[in-house]
Length: 242
Image (cartoon, rainbow, N blue to C red):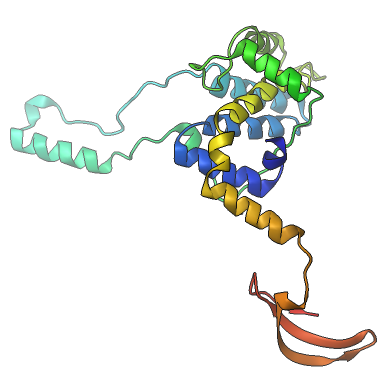
């Protein structure tokens, strides 16, 4: 599981699979946010990032739904005008999307990067997941593990000159989330077209490149190391000098 997620294309295709199944996408966003958290050098920014992660994934609050369209007073509105106003409001009000999915970007707009950096073994991670498993939670984990993170965030001083938040703050929860993904999504991912595309990419990436992979266009000349040819790579269509 970790070997797939540690590769940008593997993480991207696994995310596409989770989006298609509408399950597990929040866990992937959490992993990427934790990866970004560890790379923040400034104390105050790291604290803000950690609190944002906690509020988004561990203790999410349901925002109040407020209409962005102001309705006219009832005593100034006729039944015909009320119907027209309702239709206009429905047309101008944007469709609500999940706040996490709304921030999703396509390849080229963001880096799909994650890799396990903690020292927690896979066996320990599975034991932690079995201990704190909670299907009702957004990350599939709840209990003393998440409460301890909340206590550390309550005690931290935003204006402190030195960081009191360790880089290992989310390590145990991260390990549980990876185990949850492997337990719930891995089997379906391996049976999907997304996994077949990933395996095809790895095959192309690892196999040796030979003359059959290029189509010769023309001879450009001769150099100190032999003949120089202009060629096109069949798999990508890129023009190269070989």
